[in-house]
Length: 231
Image (cartoon, helix red, strand yellow):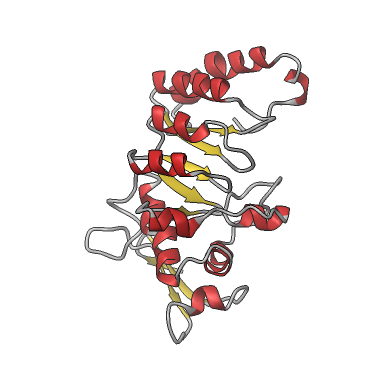
């Protein structure tokens, strides 16, 4: 649930009824999704509306994820924790109380640096503060037509290092290992290890791993191995 359709702006309860009583049962019944995601933000979905959707999803076995704190701190993180959300995405605006709450939870912060970049927003996810607080952060693109019309993860790595002040090693870890755990796939994906799926890419010669985020915009991938097949 991202934005309320225009024709329901004056009848929000009806659209929420459709989500909770029609869409979610059908999605779960047809096995179309494992998770549900709500954008808990001012002018989108309130905390109460978010919790109503997540509670309905839980009844149908759909696990929670939340996008929140992109522009305002309004209780979305606390809602994510209450409903055992696997991840909470954005966090451009986050306070010390929310960081402390995340430290006590199993909800993984996912940072989306290309969103504020595209919107020219001065607020960026405080990666350093989150990492220094002991939180494992993941990185993702937030690929969507409204605020991030790009799915290029290499640029996400670059922004994570250049603007969010992450080290190259932290950025790579956040984009791979932690990203896999945000999808409950940490035991099969996200690392090069025995028993894991062989999903890797081989780069052109580079002086170090730091060259990946350093050479932003460059095509450094020479070969891709997907599920053990070389492409």
